[in-house]
Length: 133
Image (tube, rainbow, N blue to C red; front, side, top):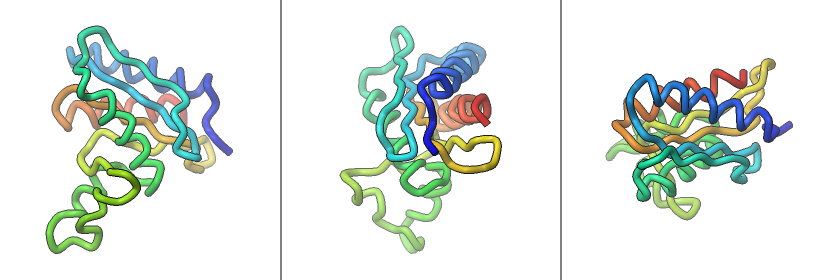
């Protein structure tokens, strides 16, 4: 099972709403279970350099079915996943990518957010993912 366009748009709408509360401008990407881009939004004045980062965060979260911040912790020198960010054409291993699960807990895609601090990116991505599950 994979995320639908309607679900992806719901995740983006929730992320945009949360971004507004945080007074940030974000790039928000949603990928399906196969890591393919389903939906994308760039808020007015969001950083251009964060477009690619948001997509890679979503793909990283889906590729490993965990928050990108968790992967970041495991990929530090001496960590069990040290150097993983160099695989798969480049991964993003800092917060802002979150798997999206259905009501049964199955991963159906992921959301990636970039445009602010990693704390804000993660909070906005989490709000988007929660809107689907």
